[in-house]
Length: 617
Image 1: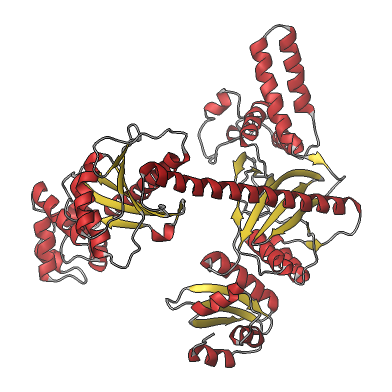
Image 2: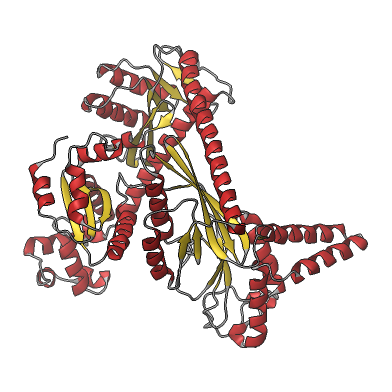
């Protein structure tokens, strides 16, 4: 392994204090962030000739071209800085999580004089609110909140600075604290009743709904009974996720399972002695990582994020070296003591074992899902070769699409699929030049083909070229592709009936909509459409965000800001003379004349100037 002299010199001059180090690639991008108790000893281990180093570290060091460090006073400061940098920079070789789901929480703003209740996915640890969750059945949660607001009329508005109560009061959905129509004592009882429900401390609401349901059924008011039944199910659905497992407790239980190159995590959320939810995560490329390093990285990543609530206790399936250090760090974040440990006996050990079993089951199910998906994708590629009579398996497919706004801002996209999966690193976008202002999809497609297959000689040649469109797009693109010397098969996929047009035939090929081969083509076509629309919208947004002054020759950001500072309104600027414009800081006579003439042009002339400036940019 070759280490450049610049890195070796830096390593030898490193201090022996705690700190954070950052490896960078040739472009100056940070590819790895780590912490160390002794910077010199830790970083020196990367530049030694070690045949037993993990493949990930070996690959990282092949790309490492520079080193940067930040010294800290203590190891705790280094840990905090490391977590912040990883969250901000997302280095390539640091372990990152792939979250399966994002669950909502119920937030009650107990820090406000008149608290509110609503659903959120962002948790702010300011001590001014109570959070309950996470919940997995969002529909049942929303229905429960609607019911709670009818029974306990607390406010939903953000602003209480009003002259009179709003419609919610007249609908009996709010007690109108903004008009002092309710006392603090009664309002506090409403809020406490809601908290009791989510904490599982009260069943008054459930009993009331059940009684209403039975009364309506006895009176043969079956529609009302069905409505109460749905309400009862919604509330029970929320409460069912709070199964009692202890008399008290506020902790998370983490299970971890490994399978070759993948690691799965299962987290049980225990609040007020009840399990209120769980989440799954998986990490890839972990074959050469130790259990200790994986669990440590997981805790840093998960509890260092803004969406994670930190409990009083975190129960792990194994002992990790940095448990005490992490506990001190999380204690500082939570503002109260946090314990990290492995229980040896009792019900917490049973819960730990249950989380471990669930993690193993989760990873096993994931493995089956990956195997099925891989077989399906590979099968679709093989079937596509058979249906289209392709000379070789279409392992690399490129798909193109065009987007414009009545001929303006015409853009093109290319998406790449390899072995049935998108390779987003290979995606390309095109800002077209020959058809700006002219809505001509065929000519636009021909330009994209010329730029892709005529200009980009270093790009890989695909096994199949897919065009979003029918016979017209195919006829427009084929001559250009063949003139560039590319012999790969070309097809057009029309949207109306999903017909497939191939070279040399005007009759389309029709494939059953249930066939995975067609679904693969639809996937790549839809992906190209999504990509080009996204780029097209960004271009329009950028154009719309421009100031009218940006279309005047000689006016850049500095002069534009100076003009807006000198003239408070656009009308004042339009009325200004050349001499007045010339007196603005940074302006000269030529630029002042350009501004003066621009405001006195006709609409047609302004449009022509604007079009020229945009295309020039």
